[in-house]
Image: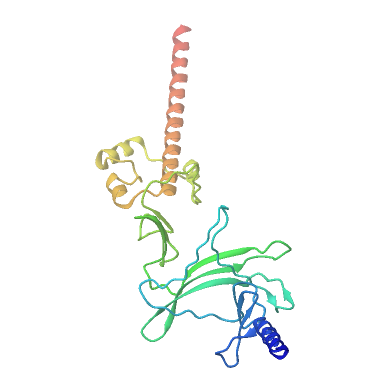
Length: 285
């Protein structure tokens, strides 16, 4: 009876010892460990339900192969997350990152018939000087090549979208074919628009500028039904309106109009002086 009891105690002790971070069977050499309810692969001290020290490869087929995470909490900022931590140095002696270091990224690949080629990636990069409590970051969304038509597209709902075309970094809002650095198919609401310009028409006030006579302007208007140098209604309908150039042109016309007024004022003043002299001569008789 004592021998049987002793054997039972030894057996239970052995089972208890084995259950504490012992290698599971089925691998040579074994590297899957069970410790206090946690499973470790490549580590004997798993810190979560499943801890992997090494790379993970996931293979699946079907309509929507998925990795799903369900979270239940009444706290607003609780929820599933994916976290990346990057260090320099080693696990036993880590050091801070430096500007330009990758903090982490997502890569997307597609099979080209021969091998899997990179399609695009999300990259987080350290962008600036690292100091205590501060690691400045830069988030980059990039495609692997420029063969697509709209390489980046952000969609809110249905046809409400922002696209970035591959032809010179052009951005389109509400259009998939931007023809300028920023093309908007719709209304723009702004408090202020700043346009960088050169060639502002101060030259109109220089003595060398030849101001057309009002008779010449009238002849041009009678023939073309619009002001000289100003695009016609047909041209505006076809090519649109360049805000910067149009403002320069409007200022030129305002300056020309000012010169006409000054010219007319001088003429009137001269006539007034002549009339005063004539009136004085008549009065003195």
